[in-house]
Image (cartoon, rainbow, N blue to C red; front, top):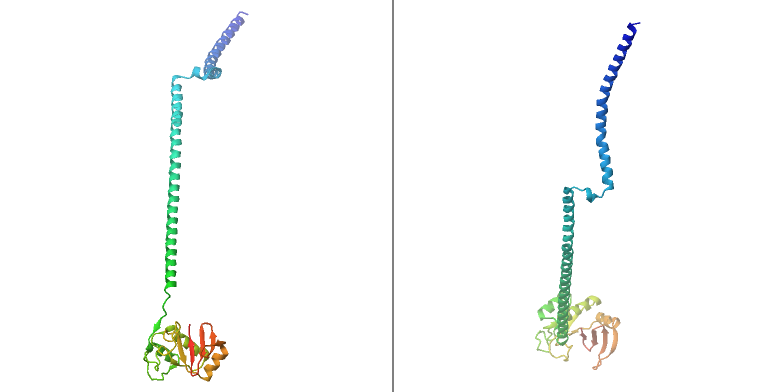
Length: 267
């Protein structure tokens, strides 16, 4: 009976010691957890307080400097904008000036062109007026050159006096004859296919006039059946000349049938 109370007391002491040890182990852990949670609660509380208090009341001194710097940058940007607005009109003015310069250059070029055209027109008018007042002189060739061309084309020439002196009426001369007249008589030979013999040219003894023998517009050719037929059939009878010679016309060419030759005007 005396041993049991001692055992019970010993058991109580052991239980108390274990409880004390357990409490001593739990207390530091609780303190650490409390310490870990404390900043969070403090941050939350601070955030809550800042949310309810105006920003200007809690902004530190350094924050004012940042705001001032931002404000200064805005002011600088605002101050620069009028400069850009002033620059734009200058660019526009330069563009207008360049456009005006181009327009003036174009106008001067057009004026110069018109002036040149007017001058050229004036020159042309003066040239035409001069040409009308002074007709172009026909090209004339010498007797030797004319007879060479006739001979080459198959034509012949014949002089009743056996001479070529232009100042002798019995001669047959082609001196100073129109080149076109020689060309036309050769064409007559080629069209008709008939023999053609020239018997009269630019020598004296023929009727005068603007389109005369002496001026190189007329030639006399010897009649033959072939050429007679060709002229009378292929050309229109155009009346009778004052001396009784029948006239046949083909455009600018007039054929007069005289007694012993054809008197032909080539125009």
